[in-house]
Image 1 (cartoon, helix red, strand yellow):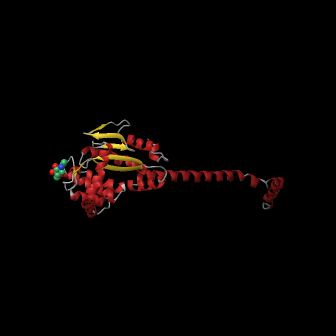
Image 2 (cartoon, helix red, strand yellow):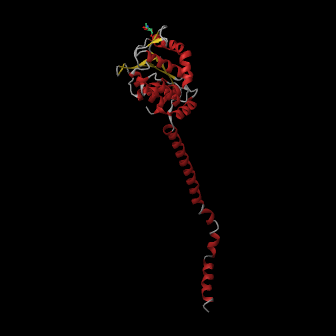
Image 3 (tube, rainbow, N blue to C red):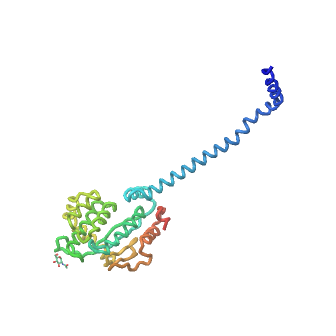
Length: 273
Ligand SMILES: *[C@@H]1O[C@H](CO)[C@@H](O)[C@H](O)[C@H]1NC(C)=O
């Protein structure tokens, strides 16, 4: 008796909802359609946000984490051919404290805009055919020797990441220039054999120096350090002070000048000044 009792209402229940089963046919297709659309959009959104985050972090890494050399390399490849590089020239003396200071400032400028800058140094000295270096220099014969070293490393390795880093390295103890031991350490630090540098100083130094010191004479520059941007006077640092710097003399001011002079597509650093 108890076995038949529960089956009876179940059959009845099924019968009552019997008509519902025919209506319920379209229900399984319409009701899940709403959540499935939602999940599709959800994954599209997740993919988009993830892609944005990966892109953002990748560009941050290139800009901030990678060393100057790698950054510069990437920057040059990216900007190549987009515009004529801006000429930045420093007129210096190898053992002048103002030049050392100025070069330190421009190391920071190059960190920002090396990809759009053609950077070089010119030396203030007089041609002297009787001196062993072929020059007379304000801070004595040792400065002339240092000038030949600096001109030679640039002649051998025109990439600023090599020659300018060598100068920045020897500048740490600029009074010791042209000390051989220091020059050797700094040459090795930028991947250059000292013997190669010494060989150039002896064979080509004088010729390179005479060619270079003409530039300052032609441009009427006599103070170290004088900064020219695209051949025009921009600023001077002499006697421990900045002079004649209408555009300012902070790193960002020089970055801004380079950016303004550049006619191609501006790199990221230009959009931040
Ligand atoms: C040229 O160099 C020699 C040797 O260093 C020096 O004695 C002489 O005074 C220099 N001449 C000039 C005009 O500086």
